[in-house]
Length: 244
Image (tube, rainbow, N blue to C red):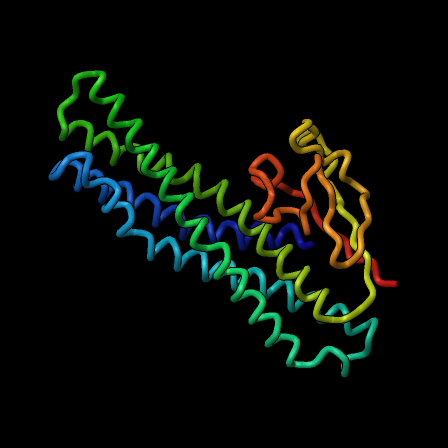
């Protein structure tokens, strides 16, 4: 996996997502000032479309890029006539299905976190005896740093997920008899807890459609969204495809 390219795509994703989250927080602040806490859930939900569009566009861009790249690499093992245009179309359909399955839940997660952060700011302001307008001002002040931190974590995690998903789907579409190896970063930041031991997972080899087992969880690839937060968030592991 091209780390430099992932970093560039993640930075693009991060900028777009940061803008959407910060915008949501600022507009929720205005609605809170006008109508109180009961307005918060509706105000946040009104920004779901922008966050959804951002996720959908970047999932598709990243998954298709890494998927197409694997299809091109596979030509060396099958001959260019085997990797036909129809496989790219089938990859696009698979990516669309992935987006349909996961984006809605990601939007819900992002909105829930936004709401929880805003309510904590409100509770803190009430405890300090601040006015509604001052609390609203605090929400707007925190919108930039909070959205920046969250967008960075989300973008890095979801870029990694999308890249590995695209490569996995493309590899399956080639029909080649491959095996896959889990490759961990193996530095002082590599997680090695009982919940997520990526040091132990390093070097694990499985079949094309066989999941890796990481701390008891079955993951099809690093960043598999069906995995726990401990295994998935900010994961930097990669998959190496072994051509037989």
